[in-house]
Image (cartoon, rainbow, N blue to C red; front, side, top):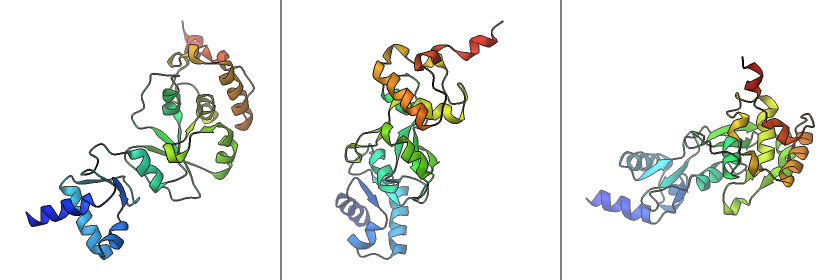
Length: 209
């Protein structure tokens, strides 16, 4: 019981998201001791790791519903929401990805983690996409504008292969500003200059018999 109380007291002194390395400073533990405590806390369901070798943990005692976005930014500060999740957040689709996709700058540490699908991108991609990124990291995960996210998805994959078909898109939600964003994104990602609304034609219809 004393060990359980000690664990609770220690975890109550930690923030909802913390690094394993923080324990060596806060509690004056060796790295080995910190690893042992983390192992025990995970087994008891008191903490949960972000995944991979990120060394970032959610303190379930302080917050049973972890803020994985904050944990992700602690591990990989360059993270940007892309893909289907970016479109869903903008109301462009009702499709819900199994794991939201995030782009990570490959020049920084990259970890394979549980809550997100991690996609490595080079610095040139981040430079090209900079005009399409919205949101401040202090407020949560930045996200690629929907038109930019769609252009990014279609840059390397066709409809269907990218996880969406045109009939998955809520075309009525698209504004004149979105059309402008699409044109800018196409230039940035070196895609053909077409109208976004032209994509409303489902390519599967060409194969109908």
